[in-house]
Image (cartoon, rainbow, N blue to C red; front, side, top):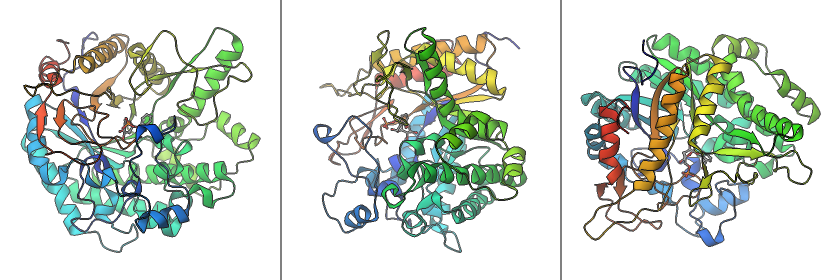
Length: 484
Ligand code: P53
């Protein structure tokens, strides 16, 4: 095998999530989902942080009663539910080898604990998979991309409740059985580490309802680890030829200087991120985390058999999102707040996106090498891209050279990482078609090769058009990454 190019069969494609894409939130028997309750907040009113958490029962009840605004962008998405054929035809035109999407759990089990699945929901994904396979595009399916039926939040406080493990495994088995002839690539939880930042989105927890917040989040995560491992087991049994992976929002952390204090702090923050893949790839809780739990008075309640399940049913590959890198400082007063992605120290060597995300292509190579060294399993970049404001010219063209530059630089570094020995099996850029932002619920934060005519308030024709990056990416795929 030549080590200086993308391997044959490399899975080029694009990535999406049901709640940011489908719309039709109350059609086809679908139940409400957590993100259906998240409102658009205009930029002027937004803090520095991503604002997506519902925190209390009262807040949720008010939202359900329609108090305080009615702009819930994820309810409308970009109407993929009705337009999937047109969209998939465009992906096929770009030459996608794979398409990352997620199944909306409440489309299949509207309340999460229903006895029978919702046939209309199952039939919808059959149609989508058939359409993809018609063009030879492999579906790559996330079981839970920031998705949990709202009624499980209301009645169980989400993943804080152990019973949700069985409900999730039942959902996973249902879709494995249904789609076993169609889907060969699966992911369990999207960005499983997000719960430490957003307990509602990551774990369906109304955080103000609990006393020991951090304890609750890590206990919920334990339940998710067990559920994920049991889904891996079920997937291997039901679809032996399938590959199933975990998914991490990868945050590569640099020390601000070569001061050992900064280096130690960076290492510590890195561990807090790699903890998740340590459990899911290696199969056990790392000792540094057990020490952290002890120091912070966190006690994970494990049932007999949990440790065996985690150890026996580790993932086949590790997938991750990569948008930016972080900087850590060990100097007193400069420490970033715990669990907070975005208030880290600024890196003076890097440029930032319009949303302040620091652009770092070499960081992707560093992270690929680090993770391959650590885990020795195939890696899959399932999200990467530039959220930007796009301008439609008078003639309808969209000249997104900034997006092309971003992606070219990242793909070049992937290639270098492959040369240096990393086993990378695929790349799906985030939001291959413009969709609703996870963090801000904006439509105007666009990632796509395909433009969608819609604004932050849902105005627009929803017409699709190709940006300049469309033909560029098509050529990248056609040349298997040789022409950038
Ligand atoms: P948006 C934060 C940091 C890194 C990745 O994000 C993140 C987030 C949450 O915002 O999420 C992933 O849309 C996520 C996608 C999301 C994408 O990154 O806020 O898996 O659902 O859309 C980009 O710009």
